[in-house]
Image 1 (tube, rainbow, N blue to C red):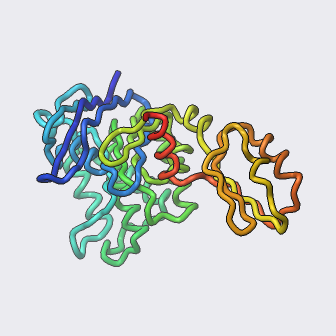
Image 2 (cartoon, rainbow, N blue to C red):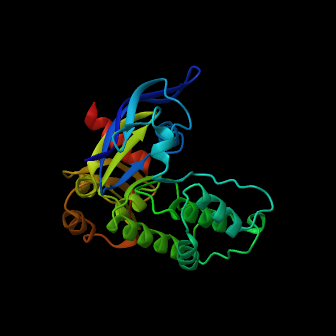
Length: 294
């Protein structure tokens, strides 16, 4: 069953592009990644999906219900964390969370305690006195406190330290195991790869690719740089899976998609000063997909 179904969703801000003909389906029980650089259209898609802004054209359903006509009913079962969180001044954390729970007409006392303990958040502090990371924790708890069926997260890890990020990921996995479907939007590929089953890549308002994470990993390029004292032969690296080969001041750099052992055999012939094997930037991955589409 499709929890989210989006058909040719388009949003313009006057003459400015928001998103264009976005179509995708998210199945019940999925952790679905939504990646793209800042300004690609991730937040616009999510806000349109939640009827916080209205589409210029196209349609979408959540739980099989129309996002505009049935918006208030749908939102009762959604937990949403926007990329930026803003709160009333002078409110204590516990007061805000209790206020949030009042919309769902349920006693969330135990749930608030469990989540705040996990995220190491002090409930009696004023929100204004919290760091950016702690304010993000408030948003996370606020989005999960009512045990939603669908969790929508827009750049949720910004401001969290690595330890807290891992706790947050573990929490999301637990929520998913208990039945929640998750839409996870990020510009950080490694986060999405750790967590998600499938991913949609968006750039300049359009979906470039929808792919299984396993397939994305298998076809993903690595960024390799080699620094030596001696002059390297570029011909040695003219191999299948190597692209964007560059030689600058005894540093050879390239993208590689293939058997890493083949490259290591070539590298082992040289005395190295340094070697870097990194994840490519999202921009480099997007260019790879654009070239394939063309």
